Length: 138
Image (cartoon, rainbow, N blue to C red):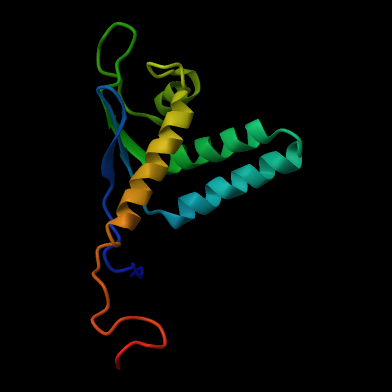
């Protein structure tokens, strides 16, 4: 049985990607985040000067591992697009939001904002009753 930090969500959460589009993501997946960082490192090894490619590799690797569903994505004919790894890749590689930002960059910002919101909410636990550090009551 895995050990989980108290208050860490174990179920995927919905995050808004763009108007009318939501992604179902696993916000707290250290294995996925490590794999994404390794994709960045591998891209830097391939071309140490291409930071754009390294950043893109990291973002795509993370998305492939943490996005598990979506709502609001349609095919060209207007029918709902089924979620699949290939359709996710197409959305993130080819899609632009209303202001021309690539969807992979929008995903990255939304993912980081959702993780930051979770951290600011206290990770699901309140302050220690006796405080923390050397001055804590014991």
